[in-house]
Image (cartoon, rainbow, N blue to C red; front, side, top):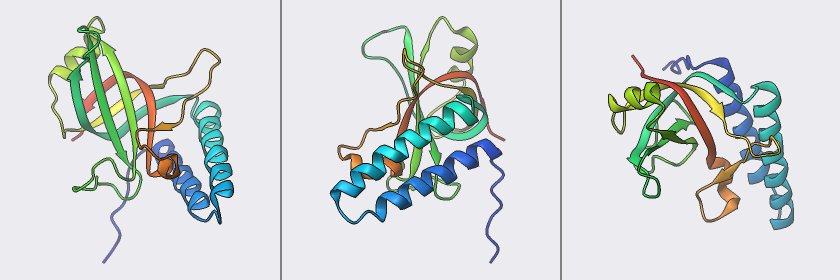
Amino acid sequence: MDKPVDNRPAAELALIKRVGSADSVCDAAINDIKKKEAIDNGKTTLAKFIRDTLHSEVKSWNATIYKMELSRFADSTIEVTLLIPNKGMELNEKVPTSNTITLFAKTSFSNLSVKNQLAAMQVNDKVLVSGSFEKDELGNIDVSTDDINDNYIFTSLKFNFNIENITKAK
């Protein structure tokens, strides 16, 4: 049987490939010291790739809305969690956050364009998203995970993200 064609944008596939490489190096580490070095190097390499090659931008990447809710801390903010599968094109049904790249966005109600786009969507919608990876004051991209154990960071990466446009995928 032929493998399905992955028609995601080249930049999206390039990031997925780099995440897979970092995960493989981490998995091959022979002890905790080497694993920690692999994690640190992988995070640095991914952040540099996003900043220097992707210019921190996302253009029409495929994702699935995993969560969408009003912030508990600021009632004029919509929190959106988008998942991008990094092994295959579909999310794992049992553990959707496994083997994914997570884009976490906070969007203000005052951003009428994005707010109105999100108002027409719901959890599990497949979307095309454009925007940018958030940077800290020094211009660095934070590569993190919601997982308690950093050893599995590359199977559940998380980036803070700014949504500029989001539409339902066809």
